[in-house]
Length: 156
Image (cartoon, rainbow, N blue to C red):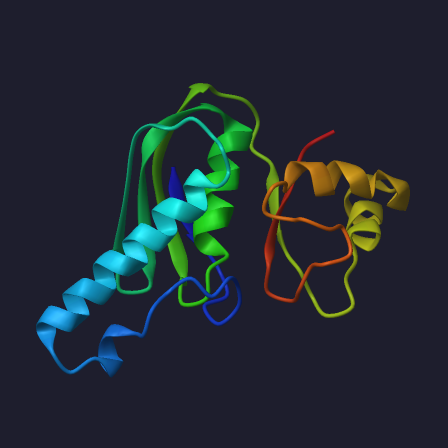
């Protein structure tokens, strides 16, 4: 559990207009609910079983509750929620059935590639498929990463 920081202006564009841009309170509440639904759908797309999943959005922070089977599943949920444009942090209140060592999180920099990141973490650029697999289904192609994106770097 903890608070994970993300680059607010990078990531998937899931949200409707920001609350500050909406004049009417009723419309702001509707937009808030649509944004929560978009977050829930993004997590559902992972295909991860989450018991008692609940997500809330307070300002730029997403709060996530629920129980998953593995640390990897938990980290994928956190990254999916955090790699959304407009999200600055994820308050992780999730639990894991079978705890295991946490992976490292890495913020992609300009000029990075998965092989460059693999060389830095594992000493071998050819181990980039491990990073790619650890970030599926968020990553669809090992060549499509962007600055500001947060990735899971599993331990060897």
